[in-house]
Image (tube, rainbow, N blue to C red; front, side):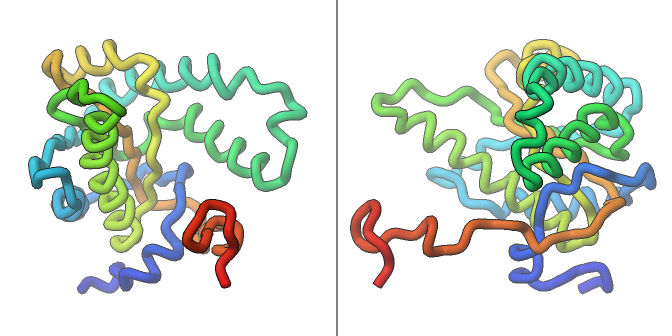
Amino acid sequence: MSEAEIGLFEALYTQKAIRRLKSDPVPDGLIDKMIEAATKAPSGGNLQPWAFIIIKDQETKDRIGVWYRDAWDNTYGKLPQEARTATESFARVYRSAEHLAFHLAEAPVFIMVCARSKPPGLSGGVGSASHYGSIYPAVQNLLLAARGLGLGATLTTLHKIHEDEVKELLGMPVEAETIALVPIGYPKGKYGPAARKPLDEVVYHERWGLPRP
């Protein structure tokens, strides 16, 4: 274990969205290590339906950054000021997310997590749940690996408003789909602990709504 690496539970308890990143390059060996960790995630039937595109080219990052900013401006950017500052915690998250929207292309590396195909049309949403449920664990592994290696990362999906343009830019086949864009770099800010609700607010006993004994 390198000096930068930390234990599993420290990573779990302090892994949070890091949206302010330094421009320093991330070594290829660390990128490979993060993606390898992502591939250790569970997937339905062990089909491993994921693919990962490493993006370092500045022109490509700039083009994705323009689309991301457009998506921001047309969604969260339209929130009135009173909504942006409704609570102190939301105001902090908003400022952080807004910073990313304006500075996304400055991240030294993007990892685009993809699915090799679209979800099957099974009834009851089973196909969709299994499909995406076989990709997002890999995204979480990627985020935890970044935290364990002293890197900052965050899961973003706003680029999907321009899904077709992004796929064309990256030369993706028609049947593939982008799932998450993860900008990665050395953090400007600090890690966790992540602010989360206490267990008594989210855990029920035996039936929905019944408190733990």
